[in-house]
Image 1 (tube, rainbow, N blue to C red):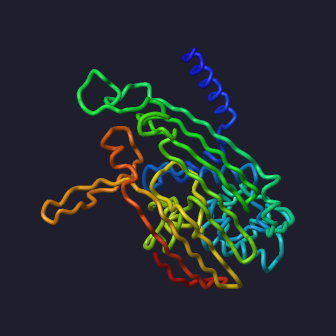
Image 2: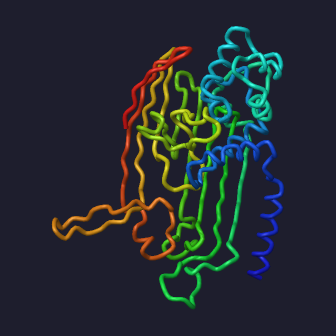
Length: 353
């Protein structure tokens, strides 16, 4: 009966996976960024953004600079030119009017077309209560297993063994109302980790919750739960995706809003707490605070009779007794913010963490 239940679950998951195929336009844009990726990551926020804007195209008549940056298609100069064109000539009448925007070439416009639209602007200061209705619910359940048994699962060999099963399981629920409100919860179990037993009696090894709202009066962004902070091109702090040098020289400069919601399975590069961005006129300021547990390895100092951190464990794996002993044994408290003065062609600011 147990085997039958597993087979039925796999079949249901396969059926669900077929209905969530990535559109060709999204695949192409992801491939365009692959060579510029700085390394392997579990942060799939860019894929989530592309899929959302593919099914809910961004309205160019109301998109601001931060929204346009989320597509990672336009350079800062192109974004400034697009917004300036809209201010001078009014709302776009047709999507093909993009050809008249300075610095926008045909190839860039082709990459942009699947994710944008042109229609009358709608009010963005929607009451919070109304945002809880009429949004889109999404649920993802994914299970994977490597066919070849790794050494940690082979009981016939020597060495430390993994305590859990070979399956990796992930679930994610998200509610999203346009670009104004989103919240969700995520659970993730890596291969080799226990599930509802042993050290993982609470089920998944990693849980994440986030609530993120935009344009609540002078509050431009409000983040509760898990979120990322991006300051100073990474010299201060950068937790969103970053790309290395590639054939696209315009992609060297990092692009992201200061605060972004976090709904990925990576267990390290994010904050857990509260963040808020307030803006009025040409001045914008962000403050945030975060308290969270990290995995770290401690080594005893026999001279001073103290323990010191030898390494931070960023993989999120808790499969063996030694890995479980290092779980959540370090508390990280961080806070900071920035203030920015913006003009049409320049901005100046100060960051602190």
